[in-house]
Image (cartoon, rainbow, N blue to C red):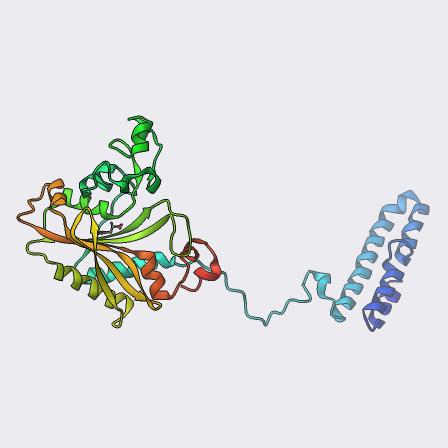
Length: 336
Ligand code: PHE
């Protein structure tokens, strides 16, 4: 019977014929093997063990003959190989992450400013009103301190002075910094001029997200303090920076403006898609700020600027919607 089965499997010319042969010999209901199994009941108990072993050997032999034929006909699943597997196809590379475009931009900006002698400094994102406002000449009743324009925290420290402190943003409260100008104060409190630093980091404002706004974004703050610093120095540094980062043909414009911590103040615009777009503010450090950090305004002068990092990145890479940067969409991010 074993030889007969094996010959039938060998003779099968296609998968259907082989299946017929399988049912005939190995079929669970009417297969020849089943018939042999049924006869086991009639065997003398003393011989049963031996007969059982021979039946199993026979079963394996028939099964092996079937598997051989199946493989011969191309149905490779018999030994666990996927018939659609093609060993000659190139493999799929595991995807590895890479650096976020904003982090790449921060590295690039730090490098450009570093070539002009600006050293990177950092400050905390959770700030107190002294560094975010008071020392920057923004008094208590100034609209910039409005709870509607800032993220005040309701932490234990903030509430130590009561909910009133938090609501009004007065001393004793804490907030997510709304500008990196806080770092100017922290650096000047701890060092003497000459100072030449930049600070790149996150700032927070409760703006509704749209193509050009996001409640968290990054700024590049610059601060230079020395003797006889002029507005011409400020404009030169920003121009050289812009030429390096955005190209020799970039058009930059300084527009008179106002900030409590600089006098005079300017807004910095770049020409982008047929329009002037504001990228940040700048100006000469206000004497009140020097006094707040213990410098003598008669002895030192300086400039500061704060530029939007997302805007710089978007302009350089022609990104039109800031939300793309924070969507986590790999189709967008993997382009950088
Ligand atoms: N801190 C200002 C802002 O966020 C920008 C600025 C920085 C202006 C430094 C002047 C000097 O709008």
